Length: 225
Image: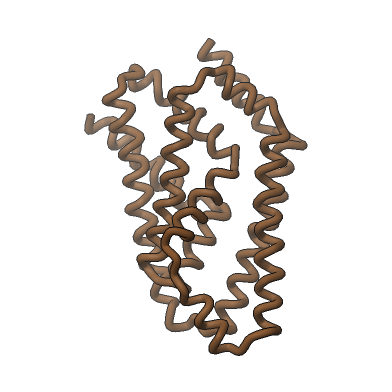
């Protein structure tokens, strides 16, 4: 068991520092809304990962192969993220023009924890590549764990817990910037995050048009067969 946990810890750390839309939104949420809000957002992200792990574990290889061979899923997920980024950017631009700095500060400080949890979940869930990532981890590590349920549970639980612990550290560090988050600075950062979401949305769409990871997944499937 100890060996399984030690194997999982580096993967959890790697996941926490994996640069993507979740990484930036988590730091921004912590700096603007505080520790609790960022943690709720992160729990939504983790819940999406747990759902993906369960799907990867219990699904047939045919389902994973169909996902891998269907670029429309990547394109659809990319369009969703791209649309979200564009809408957010437009709303922020309109907000700056229509309201005062005091009103902007009030809007940004509002905390709807349920909405933050859902936001974290959806932001992670619409990226089909995350499912393929967990599937590759499963078929790589699974044989080493002899596909024993208890060992698999220990390994993936250790990955998720390590991920959460490291993310908590990131949240606390980002929270230190809160005193510098004036309405103007907050608006600028949120605009940057919106642009990054647009970029990541396009990147996910390109995975559908130019699926470079298909060969990796195909080789993994062939080994399992």
